[in-house]
Length: 178
Length: 271
Image (cartoon, rainbow over all chains, first blue to last red; front, side):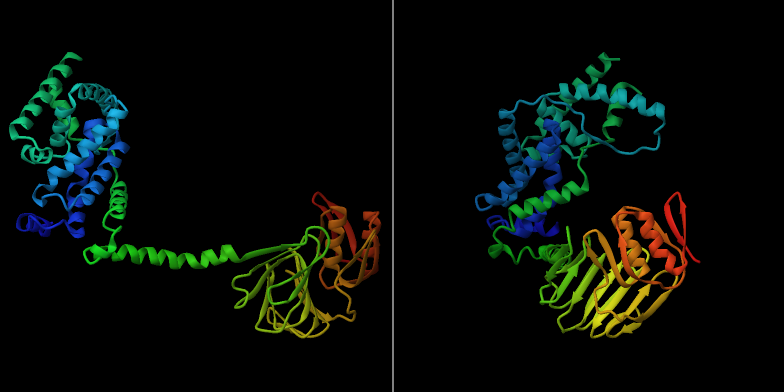
């Protein structure tokens, strides 16, 4: 990891090496995949597209600037996904997720949570794509606004705006459904 | 706790539905489609992949014995009548009806091991050891002619030429050995005829251990016979296969053996 960061700043014009490519993969693959997943809610499709994006990154390594790799691979992934979605209009369903274990799993809690999950997911589906992916990257993957901005090639302001939009929808929709 | 707080708390427990295994697979797939494609340019960079190659090679090496086992496994079965088969080195085996011999054709030049189920007469070309494995024990020879007969109760070996090792005994020409759960007996076989000669309509036996005669009767009449008497009995004569009870009488009378019947079939008892 340290090796990669050093070479990112020092040797901007060198072509990406295999070792560096592997490091980029280790650092960003999961984030790219999750980003696509938050965007589309399609687990397998997101995996495929994320992998294709890294293959594409490798194929075009001679044309790219190593300092902007992160944003570049997210852009590739986003574009690939948009192309796929054009062919197959998907409706967002946020149903596939793994729940982290908690210590309070009484039957009553589980039933309550099941009901709440359904409600929460219906609301999540109502958040526009751009806002939802930013919101979930922050809340689930724990990425900072600055990191998200870098990855998606957005300004900090834009990320903040999307976050507050997502939160506003969440708040009103959750309250309405009580 | 209001609804938003509850939602925030719940969201922190959500994880995208991907396992570590899926991640490893994804990495393998992507690396396979990228840096491993042009190994000439980047091989020095990808030395951490040496272990993948090592693992792949190891799996390949470990798979070789299995592949040889599967490819070389050869089954010979005498489907209708007794059938002659020639083994890869020119050794011959005559398998009795319904008997099966299994061996590995790939390893044959190094390992002349066969597995016999049923009855076979062997004519072995001289060379390194030739082994017939049965459930009741192994028969090892160098180059000879011999018969092996086995079922769940007994193993009978008759040596016709050369010498044969069974368990820890060596049989020479015209010796036979019967291994059963109760006892192991051996003796001279005066007659050079094969163990069994089946003719149309009749079962002919010439100095044949009684276990073999019983097996033949069971086969002919589709009956279960249990032989629980001790000792070795050798039967010479013909049994008419038209009547089971008559055949049984003819077989048991000379030895003074008794016949009883129970739910599982016929039992032959000691005198």
